[in-house]
Image (tube, rainbow, N blue to C red; front, side):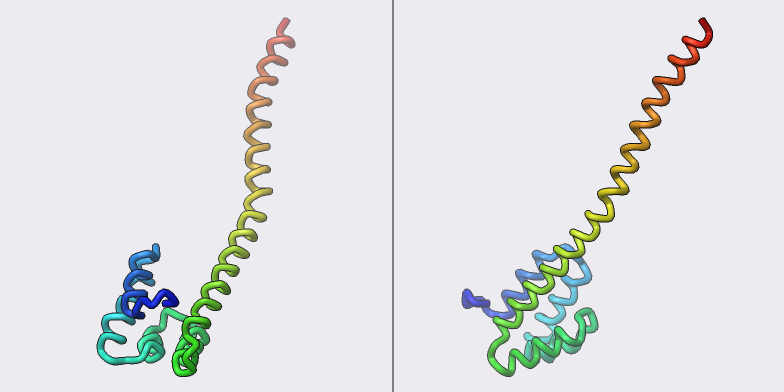
Length: 124
């Protein structure tokens, strides 16, 4: 938006870029069934239940105040940091689990080699 791209084009490009088909549909509805039909951005987002109410209200208020670009940038940074935090938590959980799993596999391989050797030595 700061580059001068109209909001309709921004929403279309964003919809094409997202991985979630549900979010893509919501963004296209906001664009095509909301803004194209004369609703404000805030009103178009209020019609959708996909986004948290706080986010929708922030968009509506910032649009009226003329600071929508700044608020959208702040929301983007907030959700990006939330995703980063979630990934760090997931990795910190998976790391010991994977280490334990690999340890069990190595232990089973070691036992599969050592037990036949002991049986062979015991039969001599």
